[in-house]
Image (cartoon, rainbow, N blue to C red; front, side, top):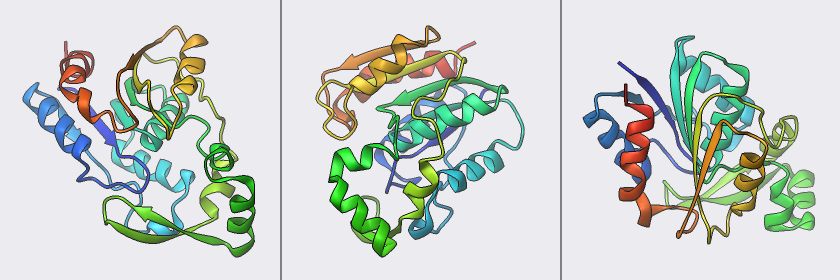
Amino acid sequence: MNRILYLHGFASSTASSKARFFAERLRAAGALIDIPDLAAGDFEHLTISGQLRVIETAAAGEPVALMGSSMGGYLAAIYAARHPEVSRVVLLAPAFGFARRWAERIGAAAVDTWRTTGAVEVFHYAENRQRRLSYALLDDGLGYEDYPDFGQPALIFHGAQDDVVPARYSSEFAATHPNAHLETLDSGHDLLNVLEYMAPRVCGFLAGP
């Protein structure tokens, strides 16, 4: 039976709407799916390296398929590039270049202030409140490549109107990775209006024979 790890996005949780939606559909298709808490209960000290350790523990050295949303998609790509036992990958609006894009999103001055003070307040979507976040996330994240070079078969879905992670990042990745099939959809970053469209494609790809 296929085993899948679903990797949630930044400032999200194991109970995100997309995680619950795809878990239900994939289990109905006969797959085993786990949704690890990538923050491991410590959002303030979140790092890319720490999240990769959570994935490694969840995978337990066994063959798995990965499905990731936004930052979770970027983590799935990094992990797959380092773990050949990963069989297949589905990326939803993957946040390629996660650490480097912060300056683009919030401005270089804000990043400098974050670095100087050591922490910043960000909105945590799952908790619906502001949370403190250490600069260690960016400091650690800058040590990882923008476009992880994995070779496993991959499906990528990205919203054409995504104003959080522009779709061009997925286009640039797909242009140099023939193993990846990209669909650009009429949606924003959350892709919530196209879940029913994606579901059979994801289930056939991850839970099929």
